[in-house]
Length: 242
Image: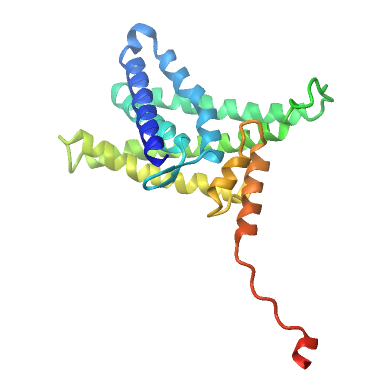
């Protein structure tokens, strides 16, 4: 199963890279808006997968949302900077941030409605919208810092590796993605009580796509606490007397 997951990860990464590079390459013919739109619409999927969807690989449990799609987005932003300019790079980041603020605002307004329950198995989940909205706002704020940092680091590394573009890409991506993973997990741990470690198989079974992200993460936390060893009970006074 781990080998299959690894193969799927490679396929996802290659497909994402080929599609985005193709759109960026033909930006003068198709328009830069096509590339920026494709880059932006993946933000929801990245955040959702990075929060609740993890698979086992030979080197650990990882999420395609953060390991494939967000990593690819950050490198695409660096490529966009190299082919265009910093003003163009800021456009999708500002758009994502304002769109996420709008999502959270709409989610709060929707709570004032009295929705109809058209089906027993399909009920509106406003909490899911709020949770995803706040996570996407935090993720976009991190993306802004990441984008600024990766551009500055890439340019600074040019003083030492001017002709080694690939090496500068790799070092810049490694440093900034490490920073982003720490920042995003800190938000998950603080706002949604995501445990540092949990029972992976049991936790993933509860994280169905229709479940609220908050309920999914809380169930993972409960299972982690339940699986922890119970400390031995202290002897009572009666047993000591005996």
